[in-house]
Amino acid sequence: MSSHPEHSSEDRILFIERQYVTLDPLGGPGHVLDLGGGGEGVIGQLMGERVVAIDPILRELAEAPAGPLKIVMDARNLQFLDATFDTVTAFFTFLYLEPADREIVLREAYRVLQPGGQFLIWDVSIPPRGAAVQDIFAVRLTITLPDRQVSTGYGAPWTGREQDRAVYVQLAEQAGFQVMAQGQQDQVFHLRLIKPLSQE
Picture 1 (cartoon, rainbow, N blue to C red):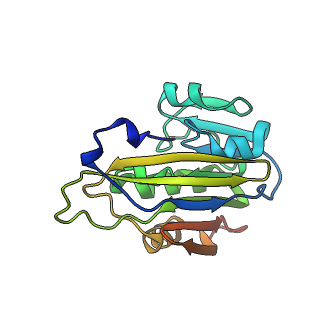
Picture 2: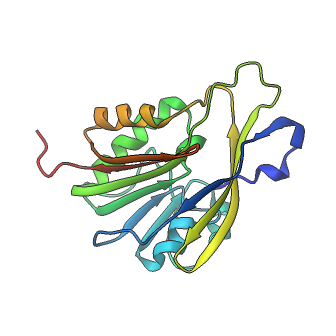
């Protein structure tokens, strides 16, 4: 799921310093459900035919590189049975969500994951807008995959969209996940969440 902030009026956009992400092939068996997998389809480029890429916008899916199975779908209402996937990913997807929808998406990801499955999140820390003139927060990214580099940008309305790693740690634990790993490089954070093998 990518928005191309460079297509908007530059004086409305705050571009933070370019960020860098390196991705290795994802561990674990089975299919990978990629939430917001349109646009550059980075997870699809990484994992190919193992990926089921969903996005609510048909145009974004049409633009994504070939390989994954592409389905128009809203991550707030996943049309899959419980415990379908071993891995769910969200690569710079949460910044597009209204704050009220974050927990809904986390709970849906939890539902469709098999016990022991992982939810991998990459996203950007967004500070409060405050008195800033710009109303769009944007990040340019250079993503290093095993066989190529991808340069892209993500931008979303700024007002009310502040987020950081701690927000998602709290929401993930409320949804039932165990936080197995977390990290941050500059303004990009990453979480590895696990659905416990036994649900109490």
